[in-house]
Length: 146
Image (cartoon, rainbow, N blue to C red; front, side, top):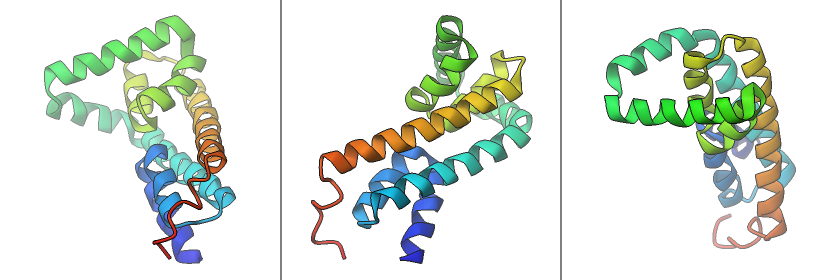
């Protein structure tokens, strides 16, 4: 069981919506899937918060101008419509937690506030998506994986 939990945590580092399907396929208990997904997401968010400026500069150099502008536009739209709270919560769902933190650094002056709302988004979406998957019995639908 411990190896399943660790695999879900590692998948959570790459994104919430990657870890939950991994947990379903491993047939881990939904509570552990939600916890390890959130913990992995929180770890990734903390790392990106700490090294965010460095990552932002690398992205500016490596991403295509068109793709970066599209991401900036989406982030700016969320930020102007819903504020930092909306960017942290909805950005985690729509853009992913990694892009929310990094692109938030382009626009947001209150970086701690963005980080806190992103944490709230990670906790919200990892629990909500896991509950939704559990309510559709997705955790029991894969008997061929043991």
